[in-house]
Image 1 (cartoon, one colour):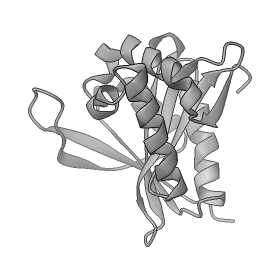
Image 2: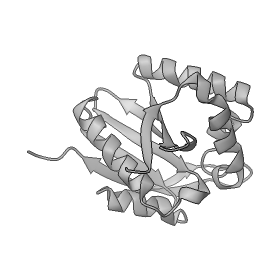
Image 3: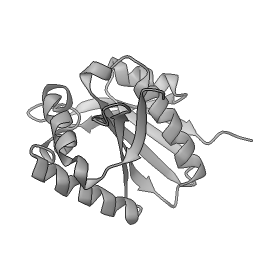
Length: 176
């Protein structure tokens, strides 16, 4: 993690977040269309950040920016979502700038936030749901210790496409 840091989003970063999302539109449109649509202008991104901070305060969802250390620019997002506090489980969703892909950044972020989710949030199970064509995300799940569980049929419908099967990967809290 020498080149990047993980921090909550702040409203002053709306322009950086918007720039990051818009510059990766083609990459994010298929699997993150809602997040992409909510960040099409700096004003939209500021509203998104404010909503995400409220969600974190209410323990509904936790969204973090991945920032390049030197410039402070946002290079990725990671979200702990679909929280079920009774089952003590949640799901990761994440994205990274094309120029930071395949450098181990997201694997490190997932490992770091898995530890956070287990220790601070007291979760016991984490999921990553990914399409088999998303090789980078499959590798992140596997390298971060997540284990394939099953295929989820018709789990995700991208814009202007038919529903797609997705793969469910799971990580359980380490036994002591």
